[in-house]
Image (cartoon, rainbow, N blue to C red; front, side):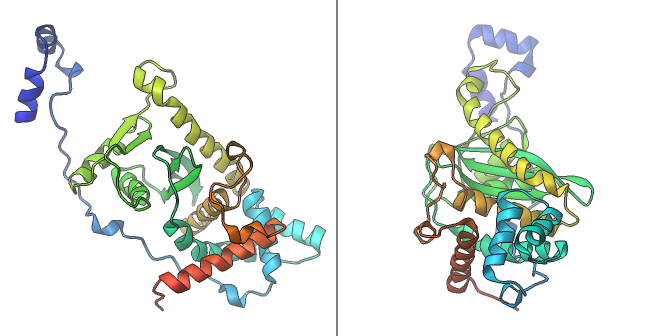
Length: 315
């Protein structure tokens, strides 16, 4: 093909001689991949209905804010959260009720955090980390604005495959008003990101993928872009610090609810030292709230308003 011939013509005489002896050193052909999934399924999935309805829960809104503060912000297990409520606040709430409340809130806040009009930089990086679901390892695909400290994508999947990488990148692209000509995603050496790049290119959506490979800077690419890789690895460690107390999840819904709540907290409620103690996204409505439980309550209210004004609710 012309791609192959053009690459051969661009080689120097010494490179052509080396190519005859060591063809594996040179990339002169496309890797063709026939994808078995379409672009249409990348539309946002409908949330799974919660076991409880927020307007009908048997606790006050402030108590709900306390639960979220202990369980999400401080990474306490549902058991410790229930014990703390009873021992310190004399409020009796079961472990299962706490998990049900967290799941119900996650469904309300997810459309808000997924569709918020973020003001982004042009520095994005992605990586995967692990969680246990039903006793088996699953993967979270995080993509992150390294400058603004905003989590853009948080796809949970039992598979570490190209389709999941495509969906994770799609969540990033959907948050851009337009795709910059020089859009570059920094990832590790997993080939699924290159295949995802090829998938989007086949749909006329073009961007670059720069892969940082290994643990040491053996090449100029790694030397230049490793700081971005290290930034998202710190995000993974922060997430693990919150996740560790859960010791895993009994269902996929539970894992998605937990990750969603972590992202809501990280983007909108968690002060960041690199941002001079400010949250990545500043909501004026939260600035006057004196403590975290009331901030959670206000954030839920903002999310409910967003759903009512922007989302079609079906039975």
